[in-house]
Amino acid sequence: MKEPTLVILAAGMGSRYGGLKQIDPMDEYGNAIIDYSIYDAKRAGFQKIVFLIKEQIADIFKNTIGKRVEPHIDVAYAYQEIDNLPEGYQPPEGREKPWGTAHAIYCCKDVVNGPFAVINADDYYGVDAYKVMYDYLTKEHGDDKYHYAMVGYQLQNTVTDNGHVSRGICVTDENHYLKSITERTHIEKREKTAVYTEDDGETWMPIAYDTLVSMNFFGFQHNLFDEISAGFPAFLDDALANNPLKGEYFIPSVVSHLIDTEKADVKVLSSTAKWYGVTYKEDKDYVVKALKAFREEGIYPDSLWG
Image (cartoon, rainbow, N blue to C red):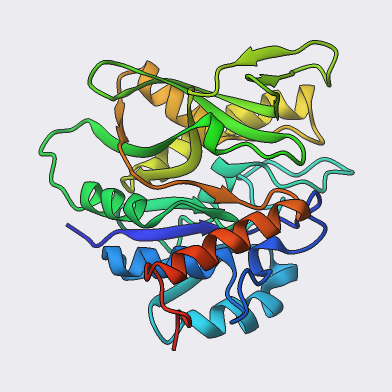
């Protein structure tokens, strides 16, 4: 079996954060969340990472994150641009937004050649999460079904006091396999429960805090690239007709289709890790304090890269 690759989705422009949060330092040594993620992935066993970025931030990204980590792990780059589409399709006039997380993976198809995990650049997933994912991706399954994995988190550990978030709401069976995953793009924290809206706040529906959610930490076999490519034209036909400027092709949508058609199963992996993230600038102090506590506990050295 080929060694798994870690794909890091880092193409976001940080509109809600107010800057490039994927490179924003979270400690006095200049390390961003992404540095901690790569450090955790490397000690879990990952030997290669792929940074999925936008070409317009390539220079600054390579001169900060890339420069630090390239001496320690194999690095490749891929670029998410809105015109990277199946043959015969063009982005509509006025479209600026990329086409979502499934499109991000689609843009990595030429630099990933085996099983791979996917994470967000601005999310801290915890040491144990990388260990359980690497162990799963290096197992032999011995049948024709697609065997994928996801690290799950409780919703209460993934919301912020500072605004709304997007999460994949998950339902599992008694054996901890994913039955369904539904992307909710506007979830807000309340005192006793979270709530979400699908109509810009006209109506709100509750979501219990112990709900299992996806934070886009998935593990896939290489065949996912074929499935994303196969479903992309149908997505584009619908998006161009109904939501040409904002429609997005999400990983959960592809995964749900493969589960529904019984082509794949998705094991929800148990992890003792706690999630931290910086959706908004106001989240930064909380993350900085958490990472400092981890260093004081000896989970990380003061200087990750020496």
